[in-house]
Image (cartoon, rainbow, N blue to C red; front, top):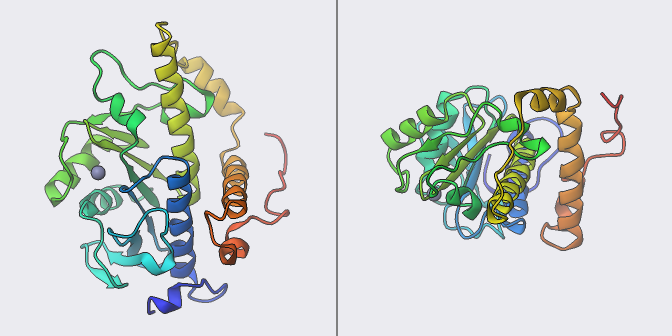
Length: 267
Ligand SMILES: [Zn+2]
């Protein structure tokens, strides 16, 4: 498949690469709009049925990424399709995707609030807000503050991440992992909200009260993750279309139908 052929996703046979490229491009623009990505950072997503994933060309502006600027890369880091070079920190994605078969999509961001929690003695980023129950197993910090350009650095980062859904990177940034690129976007929004809530508590001079195990258990009883992801994806995609942060031509392939947004029940 040529780059031209992946610019417009065709519903039907062999459309997996095109749809993944479109959703990953859209997610990158949404994350940039929300201040989670800026001039750097990137998203990778596995292509179902192929031994490869998509990631953007490193030099393309995060505000202008399109399926055209997506590369198809194999798990040895070889570019199979697309015209450009992947980001220099490709080993982050390669090694996390290799180590975690359960993960479909990886975000690397230099989110300022996340970095702040790697630079304060005696302060840990903990689940404060309800949606942060996602990170109940812990948010470890990788000690390497440099750019992750070598396979051994990527492997060390993947080891620090372990079975968790988030890892901070000392004085550098964070990585999030999720079961889909849409879920990854929603997690990133909530990760930032949670870090903001904790920072506000600290700035107020108060002792933060993170969620207890019992509270997290109660939150999870009421959780409808799949529906919640659809709801937030629908909100942010529509908002970005209205504000021309996403091209109108992408609308039909991104906006969930009314049928898709129907809940079967409230639990
Ligand atoms: Zn980085």
